[in-house]
Length: 546
Image 1: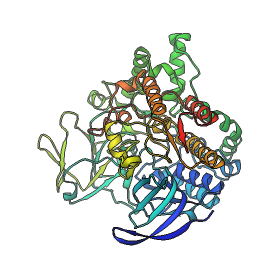
Image 2: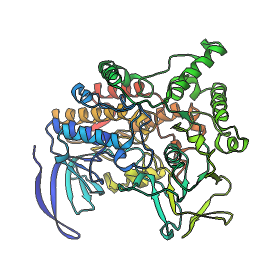
Image 3: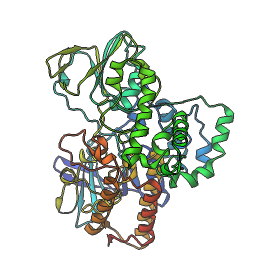
Image 4: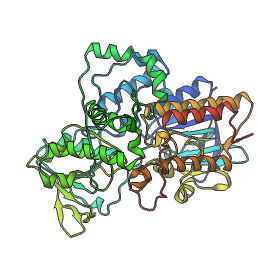
C-alpha cells in the first residue's frame, strides 16, 4: 500500500496531510523491527525519529564507555538466521560505535531507512473518535492521519535533569543521553560527574585516567559486578553463531531473556554448594549473578542478605580503604533490588589521587552556577566540564513528553500522572489503536534483555494488527476490566519482591511526584510471553474491537 497526501487547513495555515496505515515512533531496536513487520504485511507505514539516523538508545548514548551489558550474541534479532549470521561482534560486550554500526547494518539489509523520517520529533497525537484514526503532528509541521500509532520510544530515553542554573554554567555541560557526536576534550580538565548508576559508572571508569581532576557526586552507592569482556577470535564467533537455533528457543523462555536462567533452589543446597554457585556466577563476568543465581534473591530477605554480603566482601577486597568502602558500598538496600551495573575497574578509579567523591545524600546539589556545582551547604565545586549521568524519567517519560490524547480528549500525561497503568505494556485503556513497547507493566520496562522482550512485543503487535485486518475490523482497545485485571496481577507479582521495597528508578522514585509503582513486570519473560500468547489465542479476549 502507498501513502496518500491531501491538504488540510491547520491553525498555522495549510499543511500537507499524509494518510497512512501506521506510524512507528522511534528507530531503535523495537522501531526498526516494527517498521519491517508492518511493512511486510502490506501496510503503508512511516517511522519517525529525532535522530539523524537509526539506533535509538544507541544513537543518543555515545558517552565515553557506553557499551552493552548484555552479551552481544544475545542482544540481536532472532527472526532471521541470515541477518543474525551476517554480523560478527568483535568482543563479548560491544561498545556504542559498534552497536550503532550493527543497527545501521540491520536497517540497510532490510532497506528500512527509505521509510523513516529522521530529524523529526512527534509533538502530538490525538485520536479522532469520529474517524477512528490518529492525527499525528511533528515539529516539522507534518500532519499525519494514521489508523495505527505504535510507540517504540525506548524505556530509558527521556533524560531526567532537574538542576536550576544549568544555562549559566560557563564551561561545557553534557547529559550522557545527549552526548555530542564530535570529540570532547577532557584531558587535563576539572570534570564533575553527577550520578553513579550504570551510565555514570561507565563514564567514570573511562575518563578517570584522562582528566586532570575528577569529582563524582554520589547520592546512592551501587553494587557492581566485574565485567569480563574478551575480544572475539574467529572461532568464538563461529561458536556463538552455531547456537542460533538454540538461542531462538531458549531466550524467549528464560526469566530475563538472557541465555542463562535460574537452575538452583537455595534450600536444596548446602552452604558450601550455595557459595560455589555464587562464586561461579560472579566469575562469569556478566549479569548472571543477578538474574541466574537464585530466584530467592528477589523474594527472601535472608537469602538476599547472604548474597549481598558476598558482593560487599568482593568490593571491600578491591577498595581496602575503609572510607571508600563506606562511600561506595551500599548499606541500606540489598543486592539486586536496584539495577546492577557491570564495570571494569570502576572501584579502582577511586584509588587514583585525581579522583574524589562528593557525597550528596545529606548535602544535595542545590544548583549549577557559572563556576560549577553548588551543594546545599553553600560549597561551590569549580569545573571546566560537568557531566550529568542523572538518569531518566523511565518508562513513561518518552510518551508523556508527547501530547497524546485518546477518547474524550483524555491526556496520557495526565492519566499517567495520576496512576501508571497499561494492559500488558502493549495498550492503554482509553487510547484505541495505540500500541506501545518498552512502557510500564511489561518485562521490557527493566527486567529483560531488551532485544528479547522488544522482539516479542513487536511480533504481538504485528499479529494483532494482522488479526484485525483479517476480520475487517478497524479499532482495538483494552477494556477497563481487562486492564484492571492486568494491573492487579502485575502489582501482586511485583509487591511480593524486594524490588517493591527499595527506592529506585524501578519505582519511579527518582522523579518527584511520579506515581509509585514497580515499572517492570516481575513474573518473568517466559511467563509474560505465555500470557500474551494466551490473549492472542483467545481472539484477544479483554479487548474491545469494532
